[in-house]
Image 1 (cartoon, helix red, strand yellow):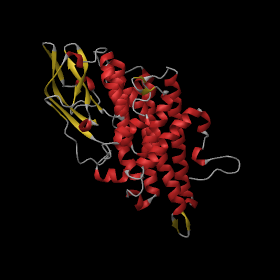
Image 2: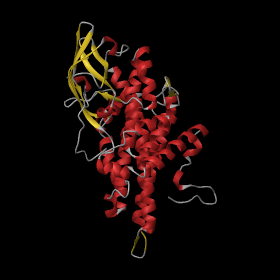
Image 3: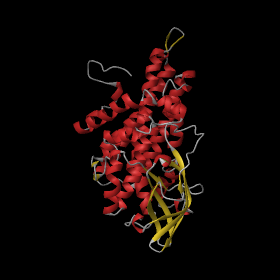
Image 4: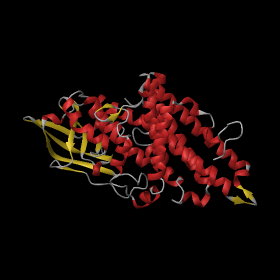
Length: 393
């Protein structure tokens, strides 16, 4: 993008959002950005094309300190929610799949144990998960129960001191590489969470293939066929949908930031390309129609970043509500999709090449707009808050 002029104006930070961050927040952002620039960007096109992701990446992310970084104790960094959001933004500026790995590990699997687990469960699992030596996944979505988790068919029943779990989960990030799965199941006592080590008899996690989105990410099915776990595998502090829904809110918050990062990369790529691509004797950046596109994209990127930052400040103040997260997720992912699609047009035929990041981000965002609550569901959450009438209940 453009260079700062003599007055200090930097088009890369059009609204001077940096001024709103603390020194520590900027340092954390710089550290994650450097990791993404060095470790992810040079290789992620190949990962996407071959539908692979390095198996050592969780340990590298653990060493970076971003796994469960917003949690306190047990080897976690205990950063602010805003700092965690900035990390998510930089990770997804590289690729949604990398941010998804971090979100599922920290905001779903680790948060479930940290918030609803026993002290023994926390001591057993969280330190290794913070370093990336232990990988977790989160089993809630089912083949016939995506947006309606209350309709889940996975069941757990008592058998003496043990529990027997039967069911299937679908579209589970990290599933095939996970060492432990947080599995939610209906019981006679309500919805309970179970910690299921991957080696447990009856548990399998076949990887889902032939994806055209989130290809640099492991997505799996979880099959539980008479899986027997001991009583101490149950998360003791919750027995309702409040448990998994609280975890989803944590993950959705990270998506609000991540989508802004993906959009920023698309904008930066489009500005750079428009300045280099010549048509009819001059760079296409000098045409009114392309400048109009770029101006709209810059508006959406800056607006999304400001919204994410505002929600981060609310979360750090203990005032962030689920309805506000829904507005952030709905608005920012839709905006990021719009930016990615516009960038794809500016790049012309090159827009579909993995030599550039735009088509990869565009395809990834088609998944991001659906997972952790579809755009339709988040619109209904907002509508319900505005009207006092719940349309889907």
